[in-house]
Length: 162
Image (cartoon, rainbow, N blue to C red; front, top):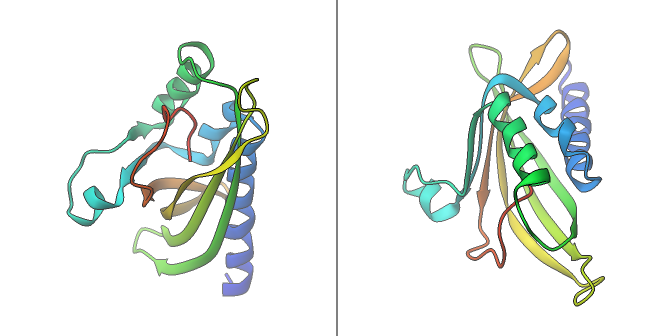
């Protein structure tokens, strides 16, 4: 595939990924991943030292679905909305088995919707996506998404995926 066309498809894919989260369509979020996948949110310090401890971890689409169910039914948190800014995108290359390796910086802003803080927006998380995408039946999917957070402290429970 032509590099420019591939890049445009990846950019569109990441925009749709972010929109599913930002528009609170979390039930669609697991569908961006392969059945067997890796999703983790890991602090930069752990990632850079090869330490495995992550803030959020899933190794299958089923675990991602469980995460959404917990978000909807078990977690208690103040209402909030997220807005992702993603870029610049770097296509690192393709691996032997066809995975496309991509890096993209991100920033996520959070706007509080509770009565005490209504409308207050703040930078919630900043870091870099380490993605491996594959094509299944002509569609891009994430085989791996490692969210390396550079934000040293998260002020509240991390309930929504990044």
